[in-house]
Image 1 (cartoon, rainbow, N blue to C red):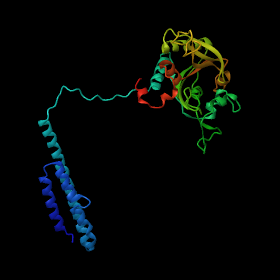
Image 2: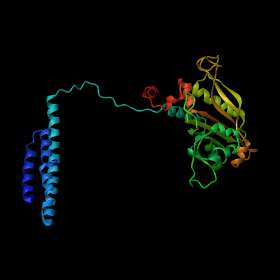
Image 3: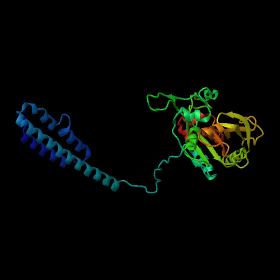
Image 4: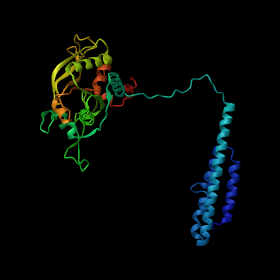
Length: 348
């Protein structure tokens, strides 16, 4: 039958065993003998049900107190034995201080982040500010305000991911993942009077099946300049300045007529191939590589945000960061940017 006297006796025996333990293994054997699942204190606790209620409480409290004191004594002894073991090893084992230390592995920016930083630095140097906006947008900012009403055929080229409303937004608008960073331009113009000179780096989403040239999530850097007297010549000069800083002073650009709903006139911009210097090769085919789309801001867009197209004008451009990185470093497949293969990532 368990009793407080029996517990005191067990504690004295355990305390002596702890003090006489000469190494960590012997100390662990003491712990198992007295505190383990089949240990002596546990065995005492299993007999508490045989005691009267008043004695059961006193013996239970005493058992818990013995367990607590014994655990503390074992912890103190363990620290002392560990310290002694380290001191013994240092005294007996030779240490070659000429051996090189272990290098700490340093992380680095992902290639896409590096390219975004480089693009952003160039345009900040040209006087632009960085603007940001939400990745989960409403239809108005992503399409309608950018001159793309619900029945506009250009929407089919930017099929995206839609989110169930469930009263998330009070407006009678679809909620979606933005298909480009152009909504940031609308938000900035609605909050700020001209002049406006911004770039909007960030993620965009479209329902594209991943393949060597498409990803369902990608990065864009879009730019916007709105002021009095802005011309198409200003757009071309800006893009030439960017291209020479990004790709090298010998690179040239050309502008080809194109269509974008939110710019008029619009153009696709090509850069001369660095491999063949514009003569034509297996990489480019014609000597040119497409890098971005651009154009003069459509008057309908300026009117939508409250600007007077008779007083101000502007230009906008947008580039895919993955495509820029691909052209700069010769990456053959866009999927390599998201596969997290360290053999690829460590190269940059």
